[in-house]
Length: 349
Image 1 (tube, rainbow, N blue to C red):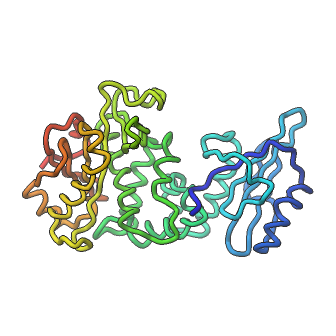
Image 2: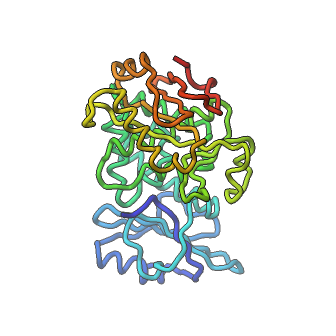
Image 3: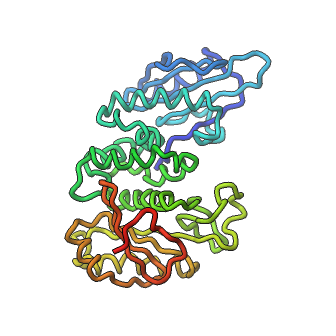
C-alpha cells in the first residue's frame, strides 16, 4: 500500500528530452499518458512538466535550469515511479525548497477544487490533508470519509464538521507536524470509518492540548520501543526529538471507543471500558504514568449522556474521558489525578 504523497529528489541533470524519454515514455507505454506544462507556473530557476495517466494518476516533475547551480530535480506523483527514479530519496513537503513545495501544492489544490468543489471553501482542511487527498491508494477513501461520513461524527452534517476542522487547522497549531498528523488518516483504498475516526481523535486531542495552552509533539519514539501519541511539556517543540521525553514531560496516549452498536458489547460504558482496557496491554503497561485520553466523539447524545451520568472508571489511571461536538463544545470528566489541566478547552461534568 502506498503512503501519503512525498517528493523524490534526483541529483542528476535533466532536460526536456530526457524527461520525455525516461519518465513519460515508460508511463505512456504502461498506462497511456499525456505530458505538458502544469497549470501553475514553474518555480523560478526550474522547468516543469505535468504527466497525466489515462487511469487518473498524475505526476509533477521540476528540474533546475540555472547554470552554475548543482543539478537537482523533484518528482511528486501518485502513479508508478519510473525505474530511473527508484533509488532516489524521498522527502516531505517541508523538506524540499519552498518554491518547489508551493508550486506543487498550488497545482494539487487546484485539482482538488475541480474534482471535489465541496472542499473549495475549506482551504486549511484541503491544504492540511493534501498528501492523503492525492495519495495513490487513499485519494478516494479519504475524501469520502469527510464527504459521506462527516469524519466520523454521528448526527452531524458535512459542512458543520468541515467548519469545525477548518477553524482548528486555521490556527496553525499543527502546521509543523502536518506530515505526521495528516498521514495518520492513512491511504487505504477502503473507507474504514472506525479506524479513520480514531485518527481524527488524535487531532481532537491536539485541539484540547492547544486550547489549554500546552505545548506538544506527536509520535515520539521511546526507549520502550513504543511511540505514544504525544509528549507534552514546556519547550518540547524546540527540543531535539532524540532528547524527548525529558524529566517533567507528560506522555499522552489517545484512544477512541467504537460506537456501542458496532461492538459485541452493546452499552456505552462497556464499549468505553473495553477500548480503554485494551490500551493497558501494550503502551500503557510500559508507561504507567502516561495520561490516557479517551475520546467519545463517536457516541450519540444518548450514549454520551449515559457515560456522563455514571462517569465510569477505566483500567488505567490517570485518564480523561471526553466528547467533542463539531459545534465546538467539549465535555469531560477525570479518572484519577491527571497531570495535565485541560480546563481551557473542556467543561468538566
